[in-house]
Image 1 (cartoon, rainbow, N blue to C red):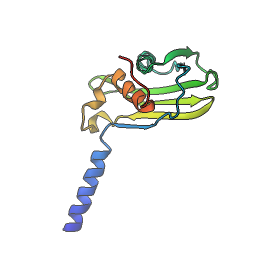
Image 2 (cartoon, rainbow, N blue to C red):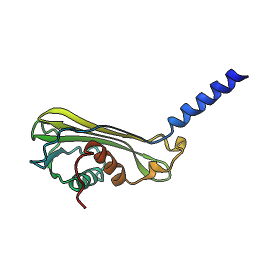
Image 3 (cartoon, helix red, strand yellow):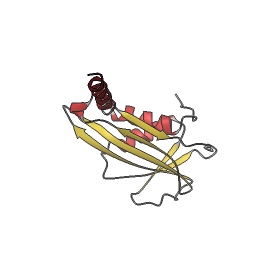
Image 4 (cartoon, rainbow, N blue to C red):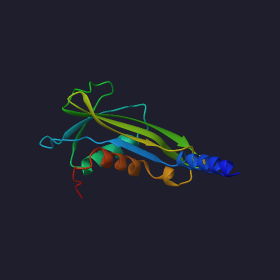
Length: 150
């Protein structure tokens, strides 16, 4: 009886953990802000709302954003970024997955990931947060030591 209870308890907790929004990041460290420019390589396969939200979040951190055409080289600028995103539908359309990667001189310097559970499995309404809110959180995790300008 005790073993069954423990197995059920552990299974339920694993299920709950799999049903929450996940943000993970490897922050960009030792960032030289003497040049505040960051180049973002546009991904036209991602919904149009992503790039303006990403640009705004970066600008709030003090960056000057230059958008590069799709397929540009990641070493085009001293600090370059790529992104991808995917949306899902429940009662509304919501961003279900996003990844942002930052490169310094063509070498990966940091990344951030957002992943929402399937809407029917979600035990939180955080999956319905705006794209802007989710991306701002990712940018804050990528650049935690960069002051936000108000």
